[in-house]
Length: 532
Image (cartoon, rainbow, N blue to C red; front, side):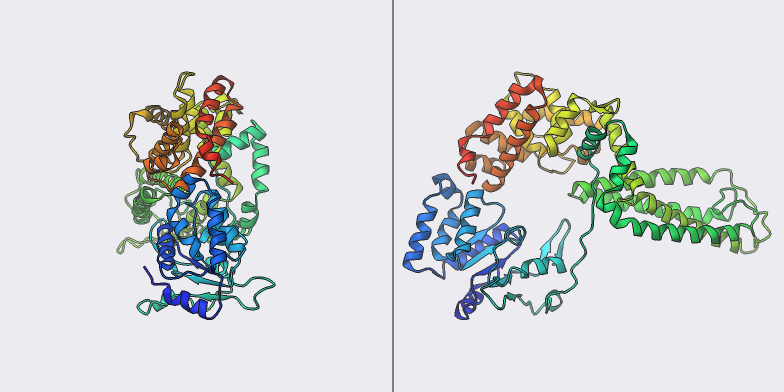
């Protein structure tokens, strides 16, 4: 861990505080704050007394949850990250805003949506981890964080410090970038999205199409599609001119023996693309990426099957006048085939483009089919189970399916745990180790048999165990340890689970009592006292 003591000493000496140290891990944030609290005491006696009086207003359990923070605050040093329970987050923000915390170590969540500028910001590192590896900070991230430096109406200048590693000088940006990356418009088609569209428009696909056509993603990328269409039209004209010089009716004609080499090469490329997509699918942690790779594998496999079939019935000798028998080549056909493959690629990109109306409608229909097979949609309208899945929100289809397999005597605390597990993402290759979640395994198998993708029916057993433990014991610390979670994460997950249970109870009359009882098992005083 980097020694921030010289930086803190410099900032105090030059009166460049309050200061925010941005790191990109919760553990690193807490360790750095504890280390600095062991070296510095930045508050006077009266200020320290005030801070202690404010921390004493927190419930005992909250103070025990965050002992490290309680140790740092009287020194004028704090930390802030998503693992803190809301009441402690608000306390840190209040003390920082009122000047009782000259130094705060935080993750980048403090730079998003919280308006607490400082005089100085310090980048703890210029790289962060994504789904696969460490990467440099983007221009937008740099501007977002450094934009916290300088308090409007107080500071004439804001300061941003960047650590320099002499072994990796290329990782350091010398000046703040002036051209941040554009924000990409995105419309994600998920089972929940399809349920919402069916609930709103029913069995009227033309209305769904109009609605999707009004989305910002389609509007933003319409010019891109227009460019692809123009390229396709040019290729069509070139191919038409070449086909007039060839006996065979079209480029890529399966009866043309010269096309065999090009088709074989394309088949080899498709096999490699399928292999790469499968590897990406296995390693992806994001639902949207998994769905994208799964769809790509399915499409490439279908195209590969089509090309394999086209090799049958091919003529052994080319009868075209352009054919060079000695070299077994046809210049016209080779060029036409190459243009034909280019055209196919562009047309596929146009059809598969995620934010064209046609692509979104294709995704809509693809997801609607398993919803109908699974009994969530019938006759173009939502069934009772579909309404429950819509009310459950992110927990969605898996919770609704599991609920359909339970009876009025089902354990309410276990149902609360199932709800928490459905709200978290976990690798789709998981194996449920605890028989208490057998109903989830049965529900998941039913959904997979109906045609749902594994990424649509994820379940986190650790999260379920944590919520279940809290529903049984009411002890946040014990429950968080059970699920290997930070207390703040458990509190927020428990609140989300309670909201899902309450909203689902309102639309499922046959299970209303069970759902309300499950809601009460997690919406306890223990949660209420740590909420703001």
